[in-house]
Length: 353
Image: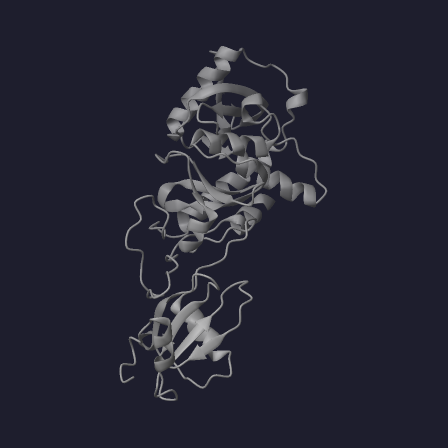
């Protein structure tokens, strides 16, 4: 089950992720509200996720042994679609199939009983795509399979499968396990990601993407999409049992939630801790012990430096710093509270001047 380790490494547990704070906020404060479910997860711990990874690892190792090019005994389209619909129903997966194809099958005998494993690629009307796997008993007397159950079925998105294939190719392992239906991009997963974004009203010419992680609280997974215009999104798609519709958040907004895109560079908003650390790295004598000694007074319109007041015993007349942040090449400067009045700004922490 070599895929279990890979998936566990790719998995991002969102437990304890707090919103990044805007200047002047409390770095330790929780999110004020998160109706879209983008804040910290409220999942029941790692066990359900690890079990999911184990099952997915077993499933992938089995599925990769299939070869759709040598497939025999392909059922009629109607039979395939009916079986797929039954499987989607027991998995409680939000997908109305527009196309489906059997891409692999195998059989084994256990205790005198014949079990057949089928692998399907499915395209949904919301532009998402999945692989479905079913392992059910084949009855000789009727020539039919038992109905699929949630325990005997599994699903993974085309995006998860692509992450596995990319890892295999790095190791020199060739794999046919990727979505190839025309509705799923015809083998071009970037095209599929673009279609999903388009279906939710986002225009993005996808030039790169990367599987980002699983969110246990909503039974969904996230994929980062980088657009050719420099913007980026975290795309959410449903896993079995999820009621979440496909949606996306910009990498800029994601960074405010503590979710850092890997393919899209986003300048992080500074926090009070940022300003504290910046001052400590200068030659200015001013020891700040807590956040009550820091106050953001504003931001310059031209030089875009943050105007931050610090209160400390070493600066009895007050200290106001002009702090550049992340790529701002303007220089760091300081004045006292009397000096800042020339800018039409008054100190808040030091009032003696």
